[in-house]
Length: 333
View 1 (tube, rainbow, N blue to C red):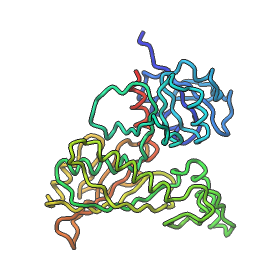
View 2: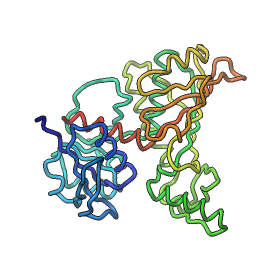
View 3: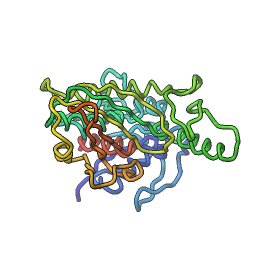
């Protein structure tokens, strides 16, 4: 019988935690999973992962002992506590950005990385899903058709703020239709039936923080080519959209020499990129739900610049982060 690697999931009931549970249950039989409560979750709760029953343990040293990798998918506070409890005894995979500034932390996105070196145990921060999506897109383009410059408008979902963001958008939408006051604890502004260029002044986490994180992470991922010929950094602008799940991107790319729409479709279609040609409906965040990688469509030439084209991209933010996190854990086997 083949032994399985023991991995722990801190924050098993969070949105990201549930996504990791689903991937391990359906696609990673090599893992033996432990569920660890975080935040308001209750230790001792009985739950299911796939067809198996699991008991949720408490966030304590005993629950984490003997693990080869620990997913940090709860709150920043629970992630920092887990780091203290685990130390250097296991690989730590942070999806909360709580240990992003740790001196030994390294940014990871296996879906984008091209090297195959054995990294071994360590502290790994999974890159922001928008940065992963854009890195996949831009690096693939650059490999075949050198980019002069690009501009990307990013439309963020409420799930980027966790379950609290989803609940606030849901309640705002319901309350608006029934003419009631709006909850604003997460966004401090009306998001329902609206678009936000920034949150209200009392929002606990400003929208600009996510935009800057995407910028930092994307710059790092684009530099991974290591040959001095990586795609140039795009100009980015982030908008909060009134959608529950899934990132959407409107990208304008100017090439050194525009190869045309058909050639671009052919060049992009590979690996984790699903290209929907002109004869198909453009991709949507609804259609991309629970799908890995990214989908691209509605590729159109810019009427005012012969060397430029427009692209429409979508990605399931939760699935994209979770599949990269599970891939990092796989390196510990």
